[in-house]
Length: 344
Ligand code: SF4
Image 1 (cartoon, protein in one colour):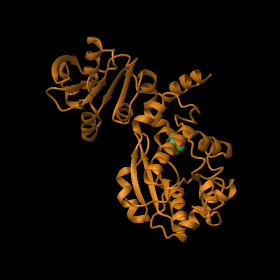
Image 2 (cartoon, helix red, strand yellow; image 1 turned 60 degrees about the vertical axis):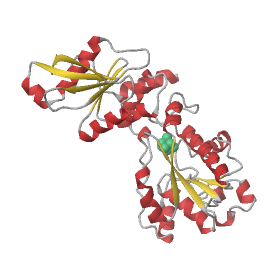
Image 3 (spheres, rainbow, N blue to C red; image 1 turned 180 degrees about the vertical axis):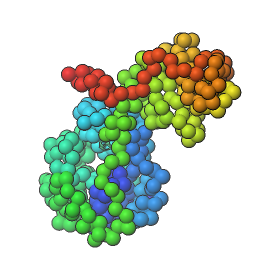
Image 4 (tube, rainbow, N blue to C red; image 1 turned 90 degrees about the vertical axis):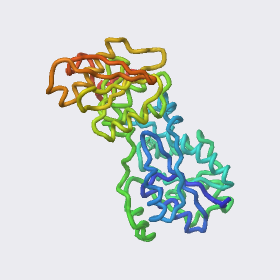
């Protein structure tokens, strides 16, 4: 097995690239971990990154673990639905396991003290290493000289003199280093985490509200198509062929698949929570929504036949192609009020 000295958290952002390069410059071998979930991660870019930056990268899927964390992150959410402190803790715990498996001696991350309001304040950095139980291993190469020397520095795994002393929100030093390392592509600043974006977060909140044990699959589904909710009844409406294919891939036992029978139209998926089956009326309403999003069915008018498939059994209902009452698309302002009320 290849011997690695250091395991790195690798988001694909500039800071994570530079952290790995700084350590490679010291002659250390790096295994970079790129975490993926329904909320972040671009595993398809790994081959390209490896080629461009000369870093050995592997994808680590934390989707289901993350879905559970979302039910109640101990350190709370940031501005939107981003549990940054607990997110870092989860990633570092996984990195520690990988480090031990690989026989590496340190973990590095691209965090910069004072860069982000929630997770990169000095006290937050301390909480993160304490709760992830990585105090003996974690080094933050970009700002190491501003922090207390860590055990890997003291043990000579990494040379503190050749680590950096960056702080704050600017990118100037990082951009200068990108030039020094001749990086062929400089990633644009931050972004890429859908938990920090209102447009995505508003789709996730009803899942957290109504599911007793949300899984990655639920949030993957929430990322797709048009979303409709009526109480705890949830319907995803495919917007195009790509959505329809993905909806089919994500369909699980107990889901109801809706399709207009005689006209082209979207594939729609109703997710029934365990022990809470849909009433016949809810099924009819979801079928009507399905027909509503078929342009040809709408133009045809009258009663439209919609097939409903569940666990390999197909039934048929006839409904008007009209938007039924009470099915709403997720709304962030309402979600925010509910989140605030829960916190208080
Ligand atoms: S922005 Fe997203 S990926 Fe980054 S630390 Fe916060 S929750 Fe995690």
